[in-house]
Length: 276
Image (cartoon, rainbow, N blue to C red; front, side, top):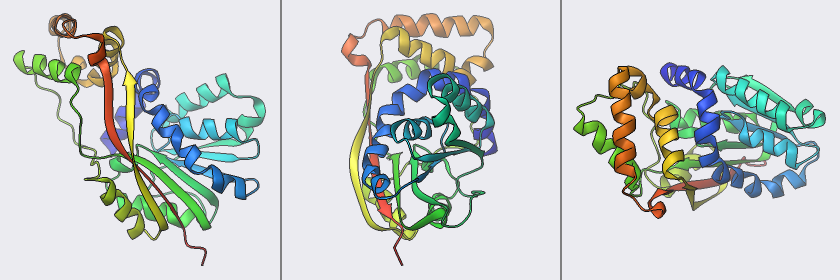
């Protein structure tokens, strides 16, 4: 996890610019899923686990005027980027109801039964122990409280721009820097639901979803060269970096605009801590 945290600290700015908009619509759907739970309680406390730059926490205090939100993430760089975005886009009242906490999702510095809703967008798969993170969510929820997560599943749909970029890297004989931490998506929607039940939640419901983002040739190349493949590009000398940039543009220019529509399946899971 330490390598992953360091990476997100370093790349928080490019994450906020290039990747956060890709997953944001899918993540924000969680707030729709928990809206009934929020409406049942006054002064609801929502905890955003693995908040990154706080997309859900910021949206929650903007959407509901009495909600308090806690954005939890282990990368200080991500929290700093989120704070800056909150100050830029939210009013004083919303910012007062927004708290930023540096911590991992499996070791939360929050009291038992101190929250009403827990949401987590594309973070659970990064935990060394996913069940530990879910049990921590269970611990901090009030009886009857709600958890809602969206996470990747192992199935990947073909995306031709990505395949062509990887093909170029292989043809050039370039070696990507080793990665100590590898995210572990769930095998299936059912597997995600089963783990949430195992953590002690009841009334668990799981549904399929899709992350969809319309890249263009230029925006996809900017993302790959400045964020998605940044560790690789930083490991190369200037000549090879230029070759990658030129070669990838030449290959991707052969594709029709429709080929840049990125789509991948995800699982939404919602459940409740038992009332008793």
